[in-house]
Amino acid sequence: MGECPPGLEIDRIKNELGYQPGNCRWVHRKVQELNKSKILSLTVGDKTLRLKEWAKLTGIDYQVIRYRFKNKWPAEHVISPVYQNYHHGI
Image (cartoon, rainbow, N blue to C red):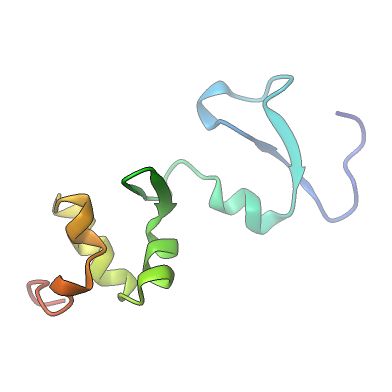
């Protein structure tokens, strides 16, 4: 990949494939931090976003979305404003 450009870091495109040719890229730290495997993602229909992105998109508090996700709510309900006030104490 050559020398690292200023202000960038090496990142794996698919974490499970490791650092190998064709699976690495130079990115800013913020992009790399979003690519961690511990980041929680949710797929609704054909769209997969991180929980924080769903919160921003829907306007639902992140902690509410996280609670629903962790408690295995159906994906559509996790991001539904219909259930905004139904979150068991959150």
